[in-house]
Image 1 (cartoon, rainbow, N blue to C red):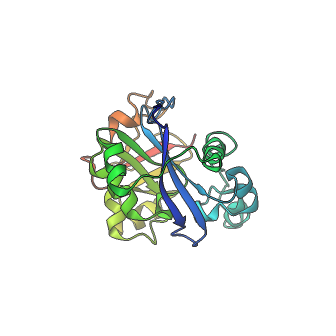
Image 2: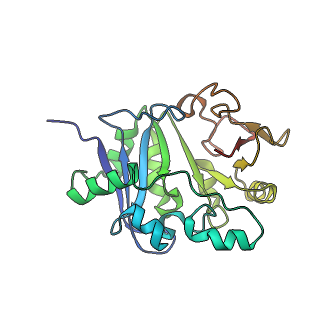
Image 3: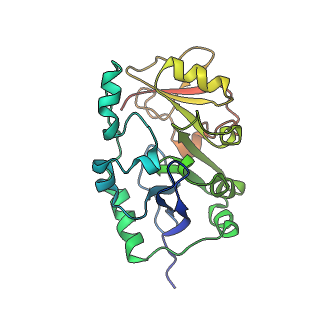
Length: 241
């Protein structure tokens, strides 16, 4: 029997707005081709009832991305604040749509908590290849991390997230003020800046998988973006890409 390439980790209400979402992990039969991340299990957090490229246009992607300032629906809010709007780099009509279509066809079996831990054992896992991990129950990610070799995770919902999340994910910071506020809440941060090498010495290091660092390593090898569970103590900065 052919091994499934993906599994449903969660199916239920969004932790952000209560709307229906699904979390699907892929990369069990076919390895990821993403050079920056390396070979990692990818997880996709999407609306279960609306195709991702349609949800982005309608604003229903709020269920899986909250008030992330890179959502198209946030353009007016961001520009009104005097900041430059930087759209999300994820092309929702590509991988997220492919995963959604597979879900609609019923190709992904559901995994129990115990199975999630077993599936991720000895592997690197990317929490939120698309979507914010905070949209799903923390137990899903704790199970995935329990036997994993390591993981990466980021959330723009760090203002609402409890301290338990800090161990699993980095707070996505879009300014120095964000970084400092997230640090006060107990989070390490991943800060995106307009230019390379704008890291605050002593508080941040430049992402070693970034273009400006000549992709010295990849996420699967680095393992700095594992929240406070990482051996790395300082936060991470990267230039906008």
